[in-house]
Length: 312
Image (cartoon, rainbow, N blue to C red; front, side, top):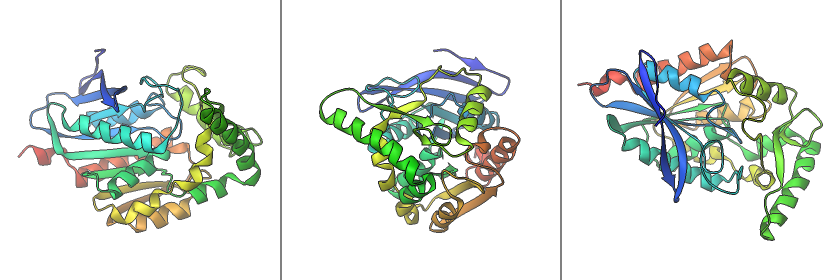
C-alpha cells in the first residue's frame, strides 16, 4: 500500500477484481472513525481517469467523514486490462458493479449506505445502474450524459462524420483481430476528436494542469469504435427506476451534455435534487465553480446520507 494522510483522513492504493481483471482503487477513510460510515464510490467520465481532479472531490468527502473509493475502469489509468483505452458501456457497468460490491466489504463501512458518484459519461452510468435496481442510498450525477441522440446532435454533423470514419476503421480492425484504432477524446473545433466544442480542448488542458499532471502522463484517446455506439446509449430510459435520492448537477452552457435533456431526465426520477450552474461542461471540476459544486454535493449527502445517522 501507498498511504496518504492528513489530519482528517487517510488513504491507500488498493485493487479489486472486475471479471478477473485488477482495477485500481484509492480508498479514503475518515480519521478517528468509530461507527460504520457511508461510502462514496467514484469514477470518471468519457475516457477519463481518477487522477483528473477526482481526488479533489474525494478529499472533501473524506474530510466530512465519508469513506470514499475512487477507481479506474479496466484498461484505463492505473488499472490492468487490455486492449488499453477500450471504452465499452457494458464493461464499465460491470466495473461499477464490482466496485460497489467491493466497497460494501470494506472494514468500517455501512453496506446499506453506498453512494454512487459519476461525472459526464459516468453520470449516465450511475443513473443507469440505479434505474436498473442497484441498491444505492443515493446517486450524484454531475453534468451527466443522459441521451445518445442528444449528444450526437450536440456534436454536429461534420464532427460526427469525421470521428465516425475512424470508428468504422476501428470496428473493422477489431473484427479482423487487430489492435484498436484510436481517436482523441478532446480536440479543437475542426479536429478529428470525440469532443470538439470550443471549450473542450481548453477544458481538458486545465483539468490536466489542475490535477498536477503533465500532458502525456495518461493517454487522452479511446478506441474509436465507441463513437458508433454513443448514439445508442441513453441512460434517461432508466430514470423512472431511480427511486433513491439523486443529485443532478447541470451546466447551463454545456455543449457536451445539453441542459434541456438533463433536466427532463431528472424530472423522471422519484426524488431528484437539481442544481444548474453558469458555465460549461468542464467548469465544475475547477475553480471558481468547484467550491460551489462540492458544497452542494456535501449538503445533499448531509441531508440524505448523513454520517451521523450511522452512529446510533
